[in-house]
Image 1 (cartoon, helix red, strand yellow):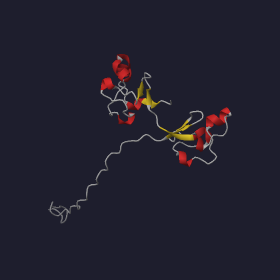
Image 2 (tube, rainbow, N blue to C red):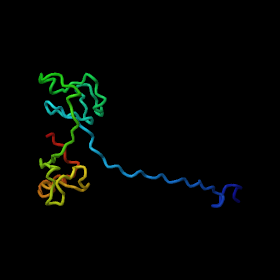
Image 3 (cartoon, helix red, strand yellow):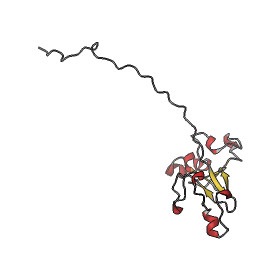
Image 4 (cartoon, rainbow, N blue to C red):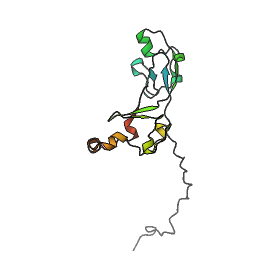
Length: 156
């Protein structure tokens, strides 16, 4: 004989009330973080990199730099104390393939591959591959395809 209450029927089990499904926010396109270029020497401050050697940790926004901030290159070269006022916003327009040194230039694009001149690097399709590495069987076999992640901004 079964003990009382030892078995339960499906009708006895209380169902949890249905919760509203969380709506997923539309995926945001990653934007390139602003960088700042010294007008005197061309040094580029990147918030992603910071300046750990100068006590500025990675992730420090340009606006959060100390008021007495001095361009590390100009200050070292003796050109004077170029402060935050000597920098301007900068966005790379050329990107270097880390494998073969091919340069993607936004101004030029790649018309032979259907990429119009003026196409920003971040607007390239996610499956974009380096046109040189894709044609070289030695690179393709040994390292695989070099996608967008294999490119680095080229300091002009």
